[in-house]
Image (tube, rainbow, N blue to C red; front, side):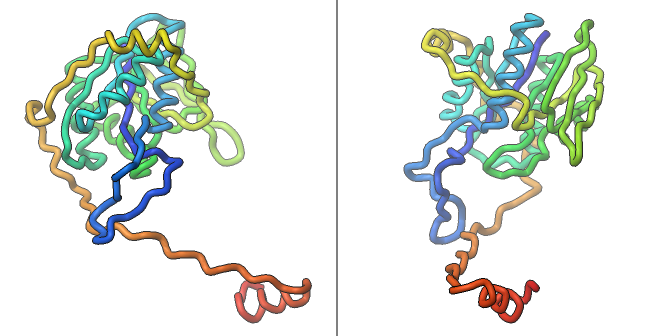
Length: 250
């Protein structure tokens, strides 16, 4: 079984993000980058399936040459090879899905695993758009994935309000990973060393002949409004009075 899994390079979610003074974007000086956490969960799931079923896990990323680091991270975890589509241009969700469709058409994987969303844009769109473009079944927000004995179907458990939703899809399909799907492993030292020798097929986006002109354009970035300082009250009656007369919430 050939499994495709995406690894997007994103700013470290634990780092405080600052907006450029002119509002044109995010200040990236001194910012650390890492694999999108939801994509890392998808990589772990792909490797677990591969360890049981056999086959090949291919890590795919789109971004600058620096994104090689995130591809190598997937290889160090246990994937067999990587693909990097190099570009410094901004791609919206449709553009990203367009590029991924081209790679899928060429490689024809049996299963595509992705993080449900990237923690930078938080759009939660690429998996759904890609599935529609390919005409594949999709199962989003997976908290458990079980392949059929014939490896032609997948049963996906999804957490919903008040319980669980169970869906079965025919393969090939696009499945997006939720937070509780698994706990990603740490890459071992031997895995890191082996990853340096694993192949990464790098290609320029411009060589694919695709129209990735963004349909969504960022016009301006701004910091969220600062919260007002809290207040202290001497007793409960005073608190109730302020909530009723000032905050107007009672």
